[in-house]
Length: 145
Image 1: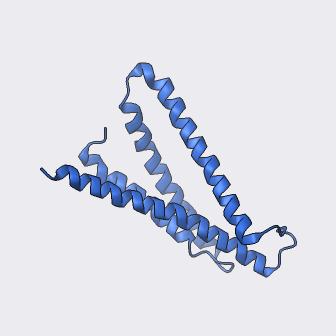
Image 2: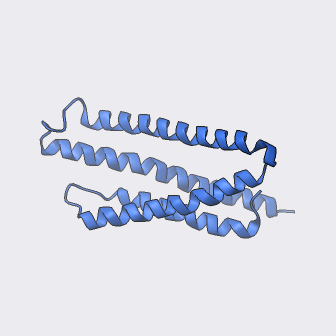
């Protein structure tokens, strides 16, 4: 299980993910490439430094004979999360853009794409912030004698 001294750095790493996702909410049709690249770097760095300690914490909670089953389960859950996220994002894009092809889309189609991207990035940011809030509540409840 995670030690108390490990929690603040993990929260900080999760906050980096949230900041990166929050940055995507401000993308418009006129956003510069430098801004998009910067936000991608922040988000990728946040997810990169967050996922490794979480995987390590999960694997350190089990015995060596169960490593293969735990790794398989962890990989299955990661792939399931990616598949569900892809379905959700496709549904959001379909709701905002409709059945218009990208090649035939007028300027308003670009707005629909940008709006669907904003909506798609606001949802995970809110989930991460809710996780941080409830994690803090659980930690406070454990410290009450």
